[in-house]
Length: 251
Ligand code: 13P
Image (cartoon, rainbow, N blue to C red; front, side):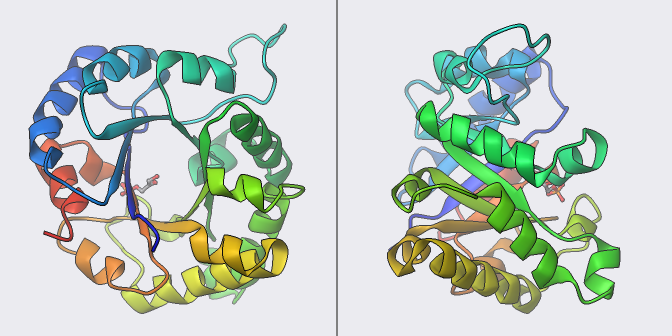
């Protein structure tokens, strides 16, 4: 059985004080939630303070990106071991916004993923097609390239430290969720691809999250799909009640 993951990507929102208020509100609402890995991803500057606030909770901490070198003359970058040092257990890698605005490629996703794993973090590796790619019938091809490039050279064992997030770009922040069937179709494809690349047991174990306008009222239908193992939530993770309602999808 795969433990579901509900992760909140706060993107470029919230000061430290706002982040603290959000986790204070969230903690009691999910304190009783069992059998779900709950993760929040604040901005870098809030990580260590949020880590302290989460110390006595069942909520884990993620960063939204990392660099692949451990240290050196790389102004502005943050190494995976520093994320660990700040209290992170997870890091989001290759979000479509980084691909779109910051030049992230499958090659940099791969370097970052390897570095995150080596530092003992769980990498939440994001993939997903644009609307134009979907309309051109290229969804599977795009996702295949992103997965085989992003996870290139990893061992089947290290895949235990990888969570895949399928986020169709056209569904992010648009209020347009992929239908349960559309999402399931791609998730099943991703799992079969992981089986081809890393073997059946890695494919059975890997968690594949859906992201793109996940809300309290659509999470149940998505989670009922055989190959959807959780959600990567943007907008609805910025409020304690809506994120808690998503984390408590099984209640
Ligand atoms: P929304 O939930 O706001 O569509 O964002 C999804 C996302 O990009 C999570 O990483």
